[in-house]
Image 1 (tube, one colour):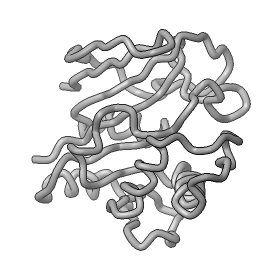
Image 2 (cartoon, one colour):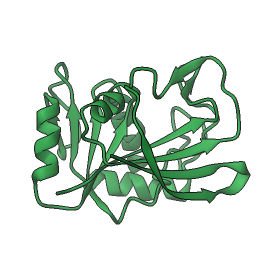
Image 3 (cartoon, helix red, strand yellow):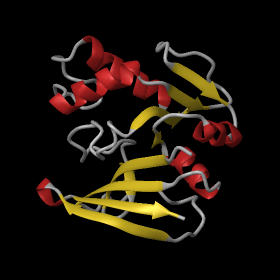
Image 4 (cartoon, one colour):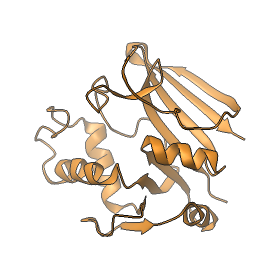
Length: 190
């Protein structure tokens, strides 16, 4: 069975967004979890998908132009992810969205549909977020691994990753210190 692996960038106090509605402390939105060779599909929620599609389409079409969220030119890793994303199937868990610009995007309507994706042949699946879908899929027992990049700051006000998640144990699999005081943490969920 394929694993469903989630990756999140968050502050030390567990925030994935600051009070402005985004994580302004994150320098790049590339896939920094070491997943690209391991996955062949992505899952994300309907709340996140429109902005995600817009952001990565902009980088795909104009890789030298500052991105609309960050105001900075994309990093080489972001350009690489944009190319990977363009050819990789994306499954959006939503009861309201029905259309997407990317031909590789499909819509799933229920947690059972995500469970069925895990049963299909293929590589692992990257659960990209947002917070609500991540919490609901963890609570449903569908997430196998949690990869976090923790930034050395206290965000204070903002959206926490685990505010709606049920209490559960994690098994630490790997810790790595990154540049700038960041930490990469990999946990098994069981």
